[in-house]
Length: 114
Length: 115
Image (cartoon, rainbow over all chains, first blue to last red; front, top):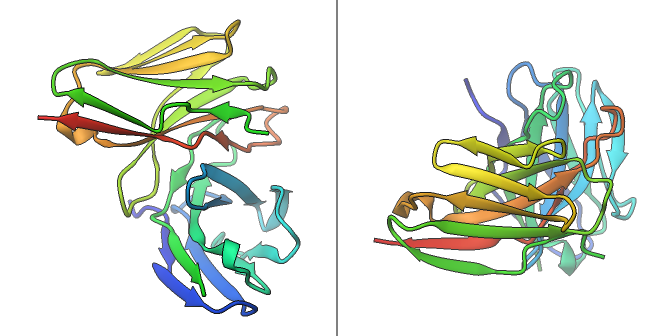
């Protein structure tokens, strides 16, 4: 069974640009979560998508947005990039119907903003 | 306000001995707790979990203890192996009728198991 896959592995952008990060969940998983891990911090919850809809978002500004496609893959967009957006962005998936089913994480996209 | 705290950034243990990783939380609404392990250049992987209705859960070499009155949980690894060397994240969630699945993570503890 293929795990959660994320692309690209690394992404370098300059301040003010836009970044697009992609995630494919485990087959059969319909929920996708995005987390940010900035240097020295734990994982911070960004967004939760389920069945194509945004279900919850963390304490991040609106320039962090995303969507989930009919095949349950997901995209995270970060507009007007700032230096502090440099971080590891992790995507995770889980079965919607499984109560407290553990998240399965991808290996992340390392975003560097210069 | 950090609701899940791992006060030890790092821990070093000899192979074969016990590793004890600690985690404290402040939100009394948390009812489900998990530990994740993360190797460099990889995403976190689920290790073990515990519901607030229990005070202990065991899986092989890994045991998680929950002390609700102290708002404290710990992960015990016995015996520790060099392959256990990784960053360990404590996480907690509030299950609002199954409709709000959002984990709050600690900052992690780097465990080094020396041969």
